[in-house]
Image (cartoon, rainbow, N blue to C red; front, side, top):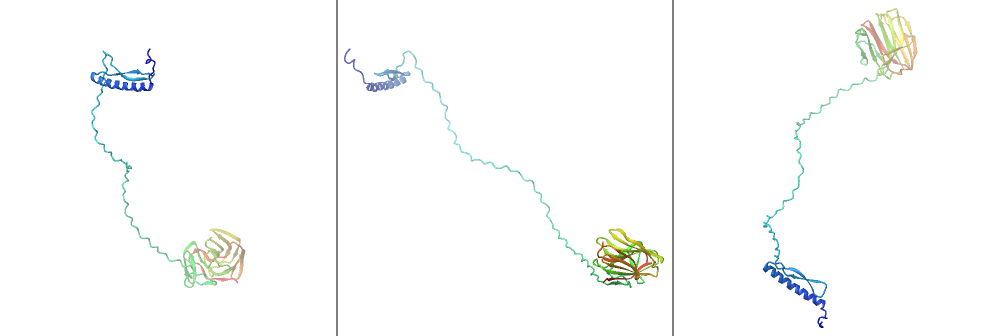
Length: 300
């Protein structure tokens, strides 16, 4: 073995040489493959190192070189330029309102003019003493219930077989004396009324049941809300008859005293009523049962 055989090749230099040879082989192989239709196959060359260097591989004789398969791309047809549509904003769904039918025009009516009724003129406060002789007609202060008329200067019923009344005075009257003249030819009941309170329909009554000139049955009656209650015992006196008779009732606080003329007939005590009007009543029998010379005086 010669001395040149013992020399080792520099690895760096071998690499460069190998790379150059590989490049030349690649170029040559490409040219040859193009000319003869053969495709060069790569070969590995070891140049002084364990790292192979890729070089062109010559075609194997007698074997046809595989040709690459070409797939024809479709003819490119340029697309029409796309113009972006404007963004569409959905509108809210419209719900049609119901058809409006106008109401008829309102015609205002004129406000009714209030026609005030004339105010009731209150009766003037009646002061004591009070007197009525019934010469022509009753005084206007009387409140008549039923039909009455003046006959020969006396106040008489103008109807039959029913109770009728006449009231006068002030509900604040308290202590007083009532005088009246009664003439009664037939047999009729009379009433002398004191402390009449209309709101509660209350009063104290002296009732005389006359039987011609024979006698009269006298009793006190408390009348309240259509209920009559006898107060104390009844007393019998002489009848007034057609010639007539004067009677009197004194009312002082809760004491009631009944007189025939100046004679005391009956006296009771009752505290139910404190004050009230006065009046007369009769179970009517026409102009045969009448009142005269009615008077109320204040007690001292």
